[in-house]
Image 1 (cartoon, rainbow, N blue to C red):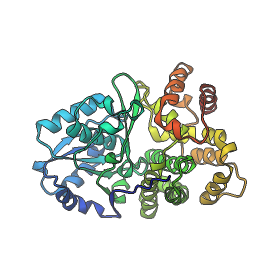
Image 2 (cartoon, rainbow, N blue to C red):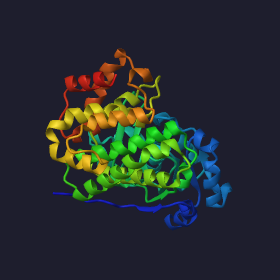
Image 3 (cartoon, helix red, strand yellow):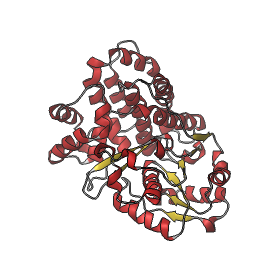
Length: 375
């Protein structure tokens, strides 16, 4: 039986940030915490959000979100949220502030410890409520503003994916204006994150034709506009299209994700490397496309059509070529990954929630081969 869920309200266009104050009022948020990071503040985007809010004195700001959000940072933000009497969370930034903000909103209503909500340990039903949540993306990649999940590196080293319809922000404000200053390298990495979401969600075996249609539309937009956005960050049409691709990717991955994300999560937990999630997705995607090819023949034909490729074109080669054109690293080794890291990546890939929805089950040897192909 197919379960079809599209639950949140999204304001999407240049100037959408103006909807922040009225939407917060509708949700009953009067003393929000803004979950963000130092980069967003330095870029002046926090100031824009505070201007749209209209009453900066009523806002508590947490801007110490790490590049890969940690349980430690979540608990630090939660302590501030509670001490300041906040009544809602506004997530401002890329995937990291949004994931951290979702975790704070959950713990504010349901209590610690965070690990009890791990869906792989039977914790999904323990999440009964979250504080009101508004998400404002400043990159075009994560799609967390429209997704039912968030990812946190736990104190024990695991990188856990928490998933529940409760975690979909009540309101998303998608204003491409906020992405105009994003540097080319980050535009490329987050854009490949969006493209990977669309491809992996489409390929999962879960039955959800509307989500598949959304995924193909997002892929079509992302594939055709990522190079324009990387080459000219002021290209407003390209920025609009990439933000739509990002949002659609998240709407699509209500179906789940796959082995690309399993490996990206596993590699992203390596604390000393601080690897960017979207960049990891870009690098792992060709190997996973080759691994899945034998069981996805019909869907691969539809992917080629959406990407504007010739019938029979090699999808993995097409992605690898795009990676090279937009400046992605040559491989994992160029990002600092060594053979010593590989056993841990294999172990955590197999345990990751996303591994369960890959169209072909991967063994430890399969993961080892895909990692080797990506080195």
